[in-house]
Length: 148
Image (cartoon, rainbow, N blue to C red; front, side):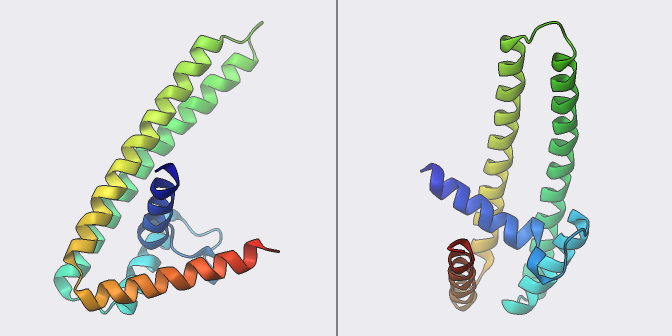
């Protein structure tokens, strides 16, 4: 179950938020990578105007949520640094911080699953087939490169 969730998040991130770094987008902002990903998906799946609007709305919503979580991550770093500077570490406080971070991850995962489901429902059967073929190709590519 966890693996399926992680795979779904990875796929959603790849298609909606992150873009594809191996195509020259290293160092680009999340917004630029997301714009690139939306254009690529729109082109590859031959999306109609309504589908493009939906995909852009999903991208915007996920980027907004990403910014919220990023600022919360900065708070976690600050709290960890404060703990390091103390005489001793407070395990209860650290556990509380990490539980909060896990909660944020769960919230983001739920949103991504919801948006991925929404996007999938808007696709035609032919577009779903194209998307499955693209994801399969990406999976094979990653497997080849992981074997090293």
